[in-house]
Image 1 (cartoon, one colour):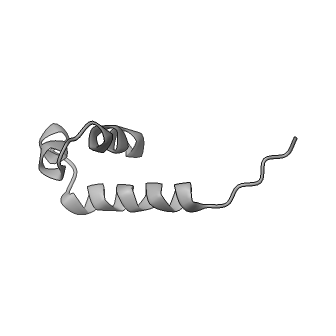
Image 2: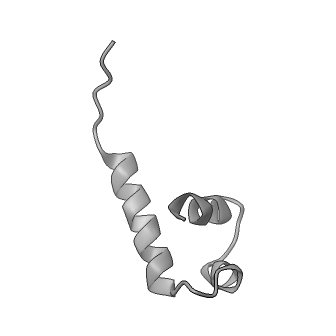
Length: 49
């Protein structure tokens, strides 16, 4: 679901449009998904070769 929300935001959707597309979600759900994605992207990752 986080991937779907990120894709919609990247496509220019506003939160209200996302909520219309996914009526079971709340604005807090969308915000939480975006905060989660920001934390994941911000993590340092070491890739073994």
